[in-house]
Length: 177
Image (cartoon, rainbow, N blue to C red; front, side, top):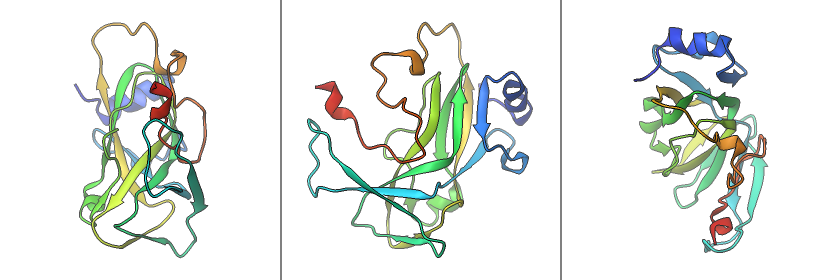
């Protein structure tokens, strides 16, 4: 079951869902709109290696925007910091973004209960497109769960993406080896 706008607000009042900054105009009937943060990143190496720490170079999106190149892969970040303590959050791209040929996540659209951070976006484009910090890029949808969670994500020792940061986070796949 997906939470409605009224249920999202009720869970926010109980601090079971946190969105900062929160703007009521971003609350949809059953989702919350999130925005592109001010920072993007690209991997430094041409060839990435799943067994090594692949470094990224971060940069700020200038006020006049930044043109994404379809031959590059970008990491972005949401403007919003979120916490989800009792629901499974899903991040989906907005249809307006998709219609510009922008994908905001390659595979990681689902968050875990206990995820407390900014969302790293895995951005690719079909053709060159100019993007701007603060533009709407996605929507968070919250699903109810059935049963108790023994260890929320932010308490797992194996969790690789718990460091609160406004910067995009590179892959930590290498920690699995």
